[in-house]
Image (cartoon, rainbow, N blue to C red):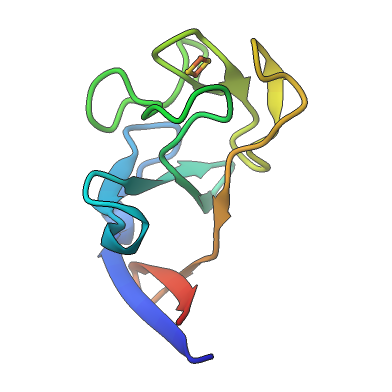
Length: 116
Ligand code: FES
């Protein structure tokens, strides 16, 4: 297995509790995406797929946070996930988790670290 770094975006595109940045994940499927967002200063990344039903989480591209900007919310049935862990704290998939991605931030850039 080889470690591969993929550039996702520049750091300034991921604003604290702001819009997330989606990116394609073609090896998971033609329409599959991942996303990164910033919470408490750190960038976190997940596969954009709810733990309840495998549907994208954002109601509008990049809109992952709920109104309080303290939880990731699923647009379909409202499951709420902790932004730092991806753990579902409320909703039909309570107790399950989003699939977390290995993200690195350095030199003002955000990278996805993949094992290929
Ligand atoms: S598909 Fe996300 S809560 Fe049902």
